[in-house]
Image (cartoon, rainbow, N blue to C red; front, top):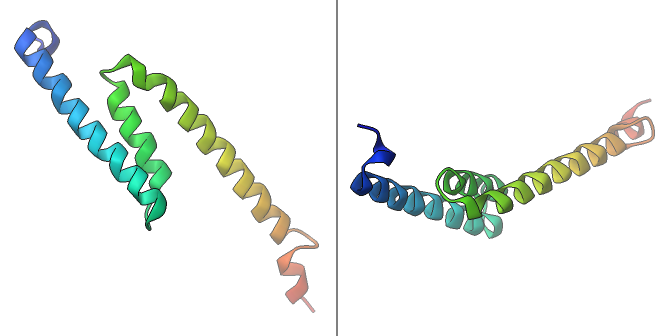
Length: 93
């Protein structure tokens, strides 16, 4: 018997996914102000919630887009500092 075909199992599964996703999402928000991978926790929590709740898909897409942009900005900044006129060129003789 499939889980979603039985009403009791379906509701139980949705509650379980909702609780676990919410806990991971809250942990991600807390990790934004404390040491830890906050954005990763937020994205993971939204991904868990999006498996069962359609409303979580849009914030998940926005969070993923934001994470990709932040990664690109960080890599550009790193290349700028390590480039020919950046940090490493100051230590060469």
